[in-house]
Length: 296
Image (cartoon, rainbow, N blue to C red; front, side, top):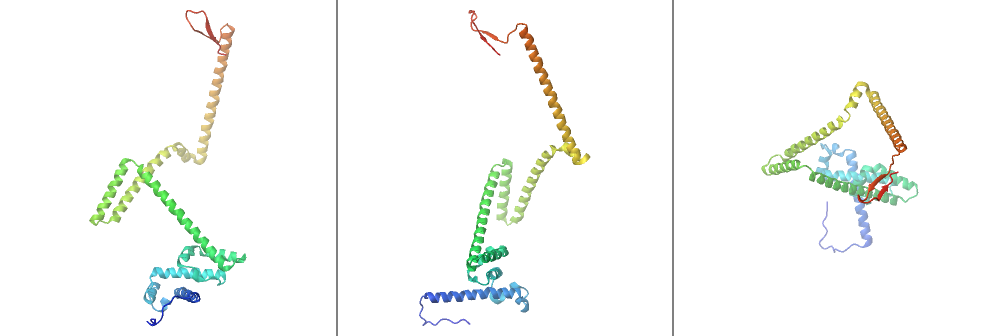
């Protein structure tokens, strides 16, 4: 039974000692709430009292919503694990529901790291506080990184949409118009959205299929070889292509060498016959002075 304070009671601010004492009482009460609630859940108090479910039990007995009750249970499990790791030297009141939510999925690792630091000589309370703070900071950093990646993804998506062909842009605009109209006429918007999404997916698959077909055509000969003789036939075919290219290279090199040899031979014969490799360019048809440009 809750008693109302007398109207004659003088209201005043708490002293420091009174505030510490009240805070300690509140922490004790909080500890009892999560520990008792955790015991009621784990030992199935709801079943003993003939409730059909845990949710029905907490709603009827404590007027606690399902989500809130499970947050308290998570907090209780986290506090219990941390206290076990520190030897009950870490005050449970310091671990809020938010902190418990941040570390619950990594609780074994958190407890293990706290134990390791204590074994290395660190004070238990400090070890627990530091590890929890570090884990929460790492989680916040991961959230920020994920958010930044999502922003970049959205930017790239919008950029890609802007670069789409005009026909696709028109189709998208028409689809958005249909969805907007459906919202005003009471049509199942989710169904319309889903159909439009599937149509877009089909177009993407068709484009991907065309790309893959074009890519596969590059390897058509290799596929035939593979069907006829497996990877060995493919490798043998490539070896034959390499051999043919090498033979062609040797043949063309020999031809070029022959042409060069014959050209030098004809040059030597021309020089022996008195021909010169110089080019005479007359500067003036009326003048007997010409400019001789040696080409050697």
